[in-house]
Length: 355
Image (tube, rainbow, N blue to C red):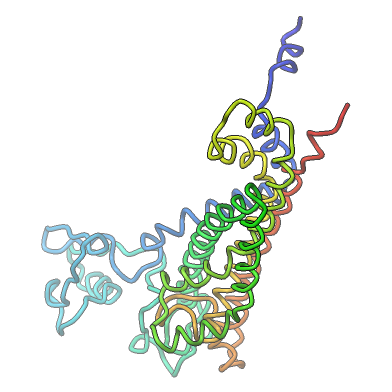
């Protein structure tokens, strides 16, 4: 028996088969790799995009302002005036003095929430330039920095909402599908009543009482996002619990908990996983829409929706609309490509045909 024949006879897990199938869809696979890389890098954005210096050498001593919880006053480095040190001006001052002092700044030395009125000419918004490659918004804040920081917030928000919505939806859907009968009937009626609540009205009422923040928005979006997944899980449980392997588990005296989590649920994950990327798309769109309407994250949180809202009130400044919408489009189209690849990779017909 040749080595190639042996390799063919080695058993491959269904996960590895699906992963290989997923990798054959190039645009979905490359979109997945790119999105993961950009999302991981977004957590270390302060090292690359920030107005705070990474390292300062002053009078023979070294300081790390970026990693210090406190704020160095301007006088600490021998500058006139009080308040937080402007490290861009400090770097320029050290260079002009020809001393041994120096400042190491991030590659792009601007922060998303920093007001630049004192360093820019004219009234904001300012058009794209070599200094601010995407221009500034109506508060003279750098649009490039706000767009990239907004990417991290949007993806993180969507992932958290999707996780908790799936946790609730899968739990309730599995209970309804497994027990059926009166549990299913009453559960479905409760879901139908809850789904009739108008989301936007609830959001307006809550915003008038409480200041929206990341956690509050996650709770509200989760409360309105879990219902759809229950229908998928419920249907899968109804189908799977009629299978012979479930009857065998029941005849062997397996507990309901074991049957649900060890037998039925692993075989019901295909539609759930396939639907997840599109749920993430919906959550990102919901956050951008809420920010656009003024019911989302509080200012000055970097947000694509807030940038678009500024652009609509300053329509002649095209970059305030084009830049965040382009970032949103590229992100969502990448997630859709990933969703298409996952849907094809998890297609049950691929590995269930009789050959």
